[in-house]
Image (cartoon, rainbow, N blue to C red; front, side, top):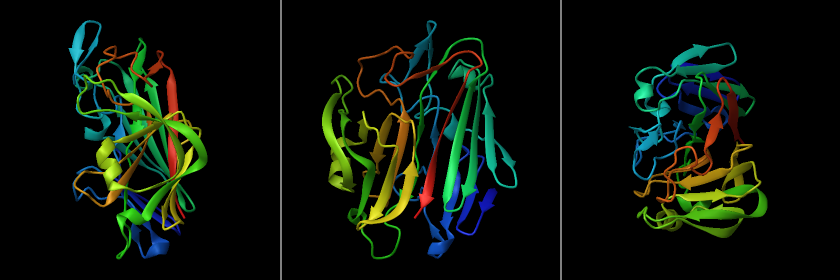
Length: 287
């Protein structure tokens, strides 16, 4: 167990996946913000690397050899090495002969947590430690408890985008032989809607410029999530009507159809050159 605390927040993290165990709002009677994996979905806030979801075949090929990983890659299933500082928690993980059986590249991975008043900043560093180009996707999957207080309803919450703007939504089928479609949408304030979540399975947006969203209850801001630089944003909850909403910034996405079987060319895939470093991050602000 690793912990950071200030006058507003108590944050507890675990080496398993380098995840947040608890994000406590001390100002709100020690209210838990993070979904605890105790309803329809057993997850909570995994990091997705080096793949988001899976390929349409559940396997992929590198240099003529076939590989496969579990859903969302390696990190969510791994135990990372923890480091506790006075004002930070960090977790590191390096490739080894076991990871290379699933993903044949050398890498170093780090997650760092810091508190700044009412905000948690989470930063990621991914380094290609090998001698060949390294293709990967990266995503976040934090689940927030909704509703948060007794008497509240899921449908009373909404997600307000930083900017009112036009964007695109990727619409896909359970049948990967059917090509995914892209439809134009207008982003402003999306009221949580289980029927819409069921209809689309996962709501996936792209072609937007907003770098933050705010989770509101009846128009009152509760949580702001900032994700500068991420080109995709997904919204998801479990079909069993569990009490949480996932707000997921992504670089890349799962294969929604079978139109691309080149692991290097999947939409949104990043390529790190040898010894190059990729940095990104996001923050959660309690309002």
